[in-house]
Image (tube, rainbow, N blue to C red; front, side, top):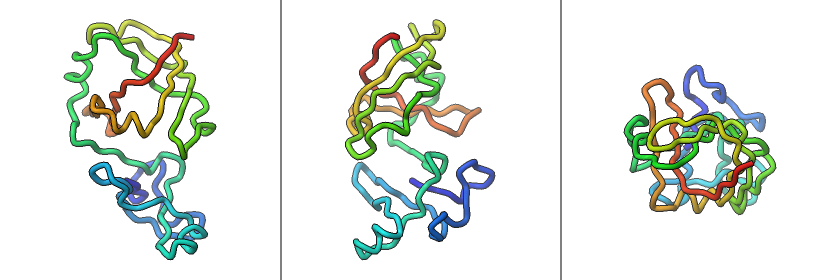
Length: 157
């Protein structure tokens, strides 16, 4: 979902640089495309309304049928990595969904506990990650941004 009207959010705006009024737009509902992301030019070609495109990823919101509490989800991780940020996201193929990213700010998780900092490279396909049966979403009381629990390729740096 794109929601540029959230109060006090970094990506909030009233109108896009193309002059499209900001509005909440559901992009995917129950795994199916509900509304494509269309610029003014593309909307004209398709005979559709333009989308109030997000500014980067700031106005993009995710929800999932399998949401759980962060603390409970963390306790269920035997061996994993919490990726806090990635480098080069803007260079990835957004059409195919393929990614290969350095994640120098990551934390190793062993038996439900943080075991220290680790440098890793994550790779996979974002669309396959979203469709994977093991995908879960976790939220905390302190942060409204959800954590996605995905299984992806990983290598140490």
